[in-house]
Length: 463
Image (cartoon, rainbow, N blue to C red):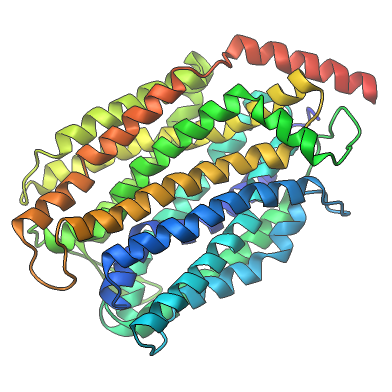
């Protein structure tokens, strides 16, 4: 259980989140835009759909965690889901971006059904994938390293998706409003994600076994979870962080299409084909590249000053920078891009920390209660993502409707100001909420060292 994790296994683990993050980032950045400007739905309708479907999906995550904890196979508890669900993940993703020729009611029903299925499939593969971190190693520094690899590959996958999404849609369909262009582009990403998930399955290994024999007692698992104070605090902090990101992500495309005046463009070749990169793509790609910088620096900083202090400082700084972002005008392109980089570095620091902290909370529960439910504990991470994404995504749709947004027309001053708020002050509030939660996180590095030593001794005794 203290085996050194090989580079091959670290890369394999990272590929799993590269796959998930491609679709996650496309959904975060473009799905609201797709539904309003391509599919033809009203933003308030989309916001309500996000709320309803994502609340159910958030509740579905613990069910997947419970199921994964009780899965028995020759490949372990969590790895089999990477093998089984990879193809359904890709297929449903493509169907989500298919645009049938229905009337308005039919389109709404189709969007509800396909999006709900997509989020459930996402949970079915991503919750076991997240839980895998808790059973690959018991060493907290190895977990920090695995988390960093995971996040580097996650943001790398997101970077690739955001770099290619608009050029591919334009290549296949001629413009960003092309239905066929979106469908073909998502099919390409579906093929890539399937390969990445299967590579993650092939290269990783489950090592950690619970101290106590599994009793498959759901009631006791839930009771232990409800007593897990660090879990609750991470849930709140995670929701705040995801609201921060999802509001900024959801408004970014609108910010450049309907607010910023810019002639910045970038032409490049990829496999012999010429592509055209818009200001929106440049902004989003810069953000993902900066996220990777944040991921890289998070581990050495956390190893020096602790995860809690690193988390607290990064989100506090993100809140301050987001408030300043509101002051930028339409032509302040350099400042807009520069602050996107700075804010994204701060946001990037958070994700390897919170995944590693969830693993610590699973250890805490086993140390405190004598029982371990890794899948259930880790489903909280996905749950916080979904709740935060629910609030942020639904809020983005409702806010656009509230500010008077109308698709594919020149926006009023009120709508433009509202889009500004969605890139600045509103995310800053969410970041401040995350900071308030993490201030009460009780697992210091000294406490974690004691827990790790106690659990290691108990495991050695049981061997």
